[in-house]
Length: 94
View 1 (tube, one colour):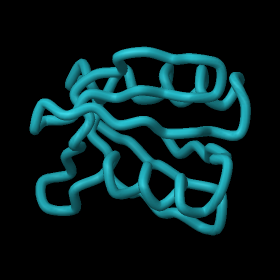
View 2 (cartoon, one colour):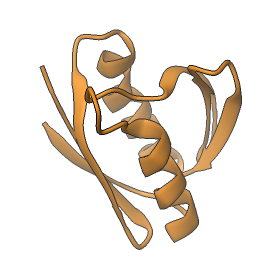
View 3 (cartoon, one colour):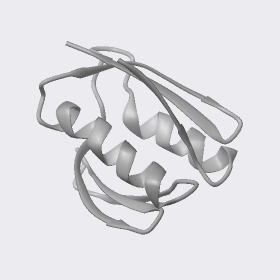
View 4 (cartoon, one colour):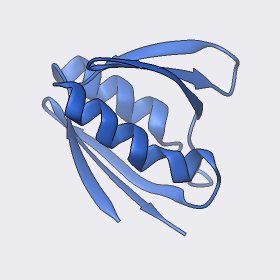
């Protein structure tokens, strides 16, 4: 399943791409979504830190949260993530 998300700018898209996908092992650094405040997502990472990601609007934030949930629950794995300008394309599989 492939999905595109719009971030507020290319910096946020690159940041999300780097957090969402580790090439070796098709893993993600993200272990949980801690909070969603309008268009801002606060994620918890494997190293126990938390990071903020700004998506274009609240709908994008909600769609990303829904998309990443099955990865957090280990039902899917991220197989590809690429940031192009302010957009990120993420692909997940079993």
